[in-house]
Image (tube, rainbow, N blue to C red):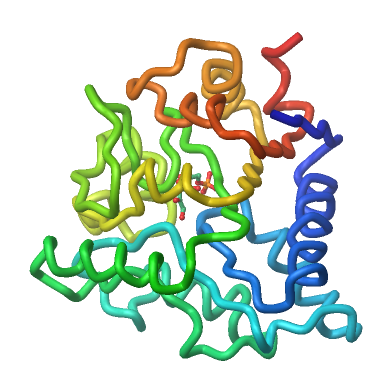
Length: 242
Ligand code: F6R
């Protein structure tokens, strides 16, 4: 596991964007596993800027997102599909038909999840998986649990995640209670993992994930078992680590 320490969010974003950009340059037809939330917004801005300067070509890239709220339509303001379009896809030359997000409108969870697993397999797996870290240690929407979930599955969001995500919705009641998410196996099968972490609120989770026991009660701790993980984190996020 490699940890890159940065001064702040901006430097974290720039540094992580360089790693993602390098992946696209060395393998133009790569499969990127992408994430949403506040952590990658700055990183996506850097990628867009690099594209605009002619340094990056997304035309052969495939993207597969980690998760989506169950019940939100792709054009819902808070859907992860909308987030990806707004923050990245609308601004670069990626082929939209090569961008995948779980289908939040599929009411049949079994169907939504198994077709997503098939999609990941059909694309030959993920070359580089980008992750954020939840305050409670979740990755994707793999919440603290008694066992690691393997493939794509439907989760009931924990109260702490609903609390953390209500800032994006009009009120807490509007936060969907369920989501479709890649499982731990999907994430661990990615050939490389890049996790970005910023801010004091994540410091305890980051410390437990990196230095604590590997346990489904701290989902990100499983990353200790992956052979190619880079964590780019700012000083505040790393403040509880020696
Ligand atoms: C987003 C995702 C989540 C977030 C995590 C951190 O696709 O899967 O695991 O990465 O909740 O969210 P932020 O970045 O908003 O703090």
